[in-house]
Length: 140
Image (cartoon, rainbow, N blue to C red; front, side, top):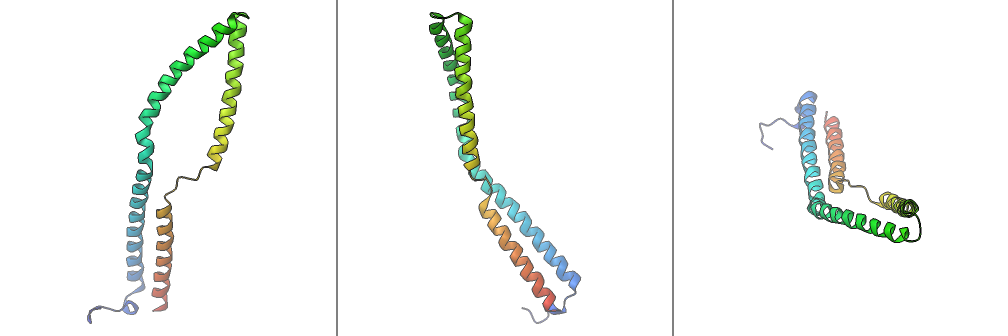
């Protein structure tokens, strides 16, 4: 510390609080930037694979339509066409319900997408600010 610089205890409380507020604002901006960077890093693999999933979904939809037509044609040999279509619809509905239930359970098990590193550093910053504010109050 320079000899001509005022000691923390000699500075007005308003100045100390203003400085603390500026430092906290800087920390908050830094934490927001860190959270953005962390979330962008976590999202990169998902963004990269989105196009491939889109293409595969389009082709799967075409295959599904062809398979549905095949099933109805096969069942129509033994039943009326409307009955064959109804049977295929009910089977698809049951499978869709099972998938939805399975997906719901998997979603409940998934960990939340939160920037964990940022959350930890924010906690540390809050503790630092509390300690700094308390030491500023004690030195008065």
